[in-house]
Amino acid sequence: MDDGNPIVLGGGIGQHSEAIRAQVTNGLTFLGAQHRLVATHEEPQIARHCGSLLAA
Image (cartoon, rainbow, N blue to C red; front, side, top):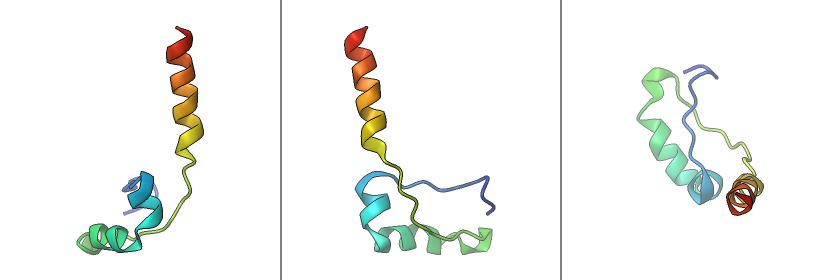
């Protein structure tokens, strides 16, 4: 799997559970899948979307 085809596990599972990330990707090693942690900072994006909805 190249960088153009990521498997994204966001929220608590993606950030805080190495075991879950490993379980998901271990079954996909034949595709070249591997797991690595990338911080997403989802909260500010959610806040911006909520602000836009409330302003509408």
